[in-house]
Amino acid sequence: MYARSRGGLVAVGFGLALAIASVTGAAAAGPTASVGAAGASRPSVFMPTRGQAHGARPTGGGSNQLTFHGGNPGVETGADKVYLVYWGSQWNSNDPSGEAAIQQNFFNGVGGSVWNNSVTQYCQGVASGTVTCGSSGTHATNPTGVLAGVWKDNGAAAPSRPSQSQLASEAIAAAAHFGNTSAAANSTVQYVINTATGNNIRGFGTQFCAWHSSTSSSYGSIAYTNMPYITDAGASCGANFNGLGPTAGITIVGGHEFAETETDIFPNGGWLDGSGAENGDKCAWISSGQGASASITLGTGTFAVQSLWSNAFNSNSGGCVLQ
Image 1: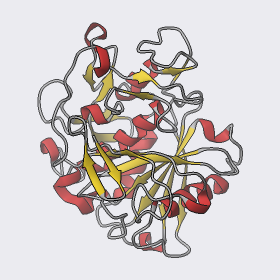
Image 2 (image 1 turned 180 degrees about the vertical axis):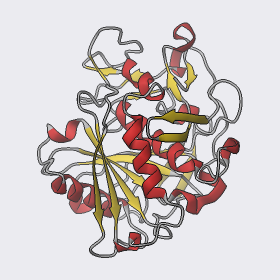
Image 3 (image 1 turned 45 degrees about the vertical axis):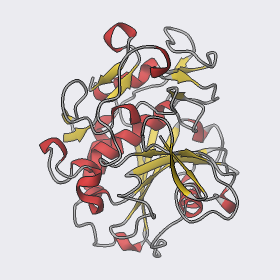
Image 4 (image 1 turned 120 degrees about the vertical axis):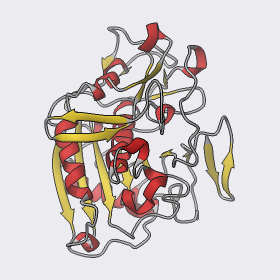
């Protein structure tokens, strides 16, 4: 993986660009900046760009499997809701790739899908280091109707290059907007903060495609995703990947962050492997063979997705699966 320090990206492990970092103080704007007034700084887990990924991750047991890291909550249980936020007046009549409509159609259909069902094997309320939950603990869920709300927060311009602190503050504002003003209400939901074309956080398209994190607030801990305008990055973040079309990255990246938040809602208390990879990181940008990215058909359309890591696959040896 790559962990960001004050001096830049430092390569460690076997090259996953998923950067798990928690930098406090006067950090530069970007995914490891302090969240400042929004609350305590939390880790951010990055999705690698295609140039940073290394194809299919090795399969097999041991440290390669995801293990539980003791979070309470560690996974999304029960209602499991997604709220989409289109931040800033820059969105007004300015969505050249139609990303908002594609994203909303995807999240209107992905709940209860076969593609997302692998997340339900992971749980919380078990010992740290657990690999297989079985019937123990409280499992992550895959309910229908996960898209619980859409907010076009477009009364004023968003920052042209937002920092993590500003993204976290917008996630807190979204919680207030949707009436989720308690820790209990925010323990099973995630907020996707979408920035408009040309207005993405620094590092997008070169260091990462998106990332998810959490922040503390008076409403409890809040899970959120920094979702840049994905087609701005072109092939680096999924355009035409595996022949899936110019907008494929929108749902490949969006699905990646969605499933990771379901299984590691407040990083890093959920399910990660020995190198810090989550269920999406281990299967990012696979172009052929088991777990290759493909299109799936939901009730709301056909969408490009990547596979997700399943500890249970191949007689509990683990691997990347689309169902």
